[in-house]
Length: 427
Ligand SMILES: Cc1cc2nc3c(=O)[nH]c(=O)nc-3n(C[C@H](O)[C@H](O)[C@H](O)COP(=O)(O)OP(=O)(O)OC[C@H]3O[C@@H](n4cnc5c(N)ncnc54)[C@H](O)[C@@H]3O)c2cc1C
Image (tube, rainbow, N blue to C red; front, side, top):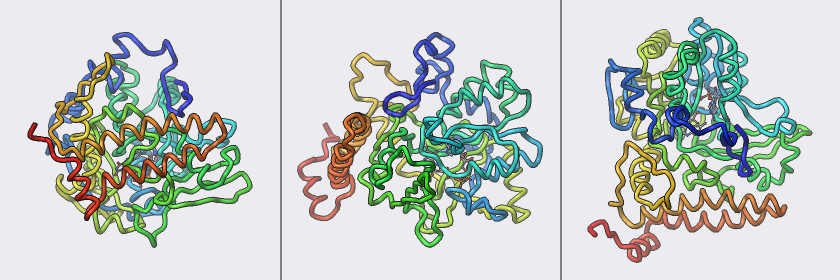
């Protein structure tokens, strides 16, 4: 893999191609889809929903014991399950994403690594909205016998399942898959953008925290935090950044527009944030958890009974509601994107049927997100090349103002937008 000029990982030229690759790539139209993989993995699942896939149980809450919750981005459940798998001897190591020791020498801020004890797991806690790739840990797993868990976003989990089907060594050694819900992945340029806006020379940045935790503020008020080489720090609320609206799509990986799995449907367990009240206002962080494999369900239920986890069982509709925006973008939005002409490019095959039956205003929102994602890469590229960050930040501020007016305005402005963009679903 190599990082391209836009800060996205791409296969080395020549590394891809061939029937083998087509069967393993999670976006390949000929690879098995999430429904097929989940049916293979969880044939006797207790429940199934269209949006969540197959599962044993669904929960909301946080870790009660130790420092997992305070140390995590949300309720600390990913790190707890990883540490518990190690503590109980179910696995020998966990592959997850941690800060690299020397980002300036390494050329990246975060990468996958293998952790073998609770302290190492804690050192990798928190969400990293940063591009990562699995080749080094796959090579390490191949080289050293043992049982491994991997924490990853849904398309990586799907890729690992596809690999496990065709590769007996990986199939035997990767025993547990811990999935993170995913809205979309960002490019490395988001860190450049933070640095530009926080007045921090990127060459002096040593650490990045996308979501610094503050128990006194709502959990969904993300605050970006950079640590510099002299130990000083710069921080700003996402809301005040030119590109600080997650859903608008700045620096989104283009592949994410063709994904229909929000909740890691093929993982043994999947974790997200409880983005509904009263949880989103609780700055200490709250998870939603989907236990898909019976073993993980038993582990969680046992720890709840022992008071180690403060989780309450909820129904599927509750979890779906916490990810309403993500599901809208990956169902209604994806259906619409699938109707777009692709100019001879490979046509994605998804579990969602193409459809443009939606209000013009929603279509405009999806068009704008696509355009913002595409142009953010291009304009940041020019800003970097010319040393003029204002080219990017000025554009981002303007385009975000227009996007917000279209997506969110109610009252007179909203009524005016709806009048000039009439609902043409009937046609
Ligand atoms: C790109 C991305 C998009 C996301 N989108 C959503 C969303 O739309 N909705 C939602 O509810 N939740 C989303 N999440 C998940 C959410 O941010 C939290 O990670 C999740 O709630 C777990 O919190 P926690 O406190 O239990 O985890 P923690 O205890 O903080 O542990 C997090 C674990 O995940 C690992 N990790 C961090 N970043 C990555 C990465 N990029 N790839 C693989 N492993 C990683 C860490 O190494 C650590 O082991 C997203 C996460 C990522 C990385």
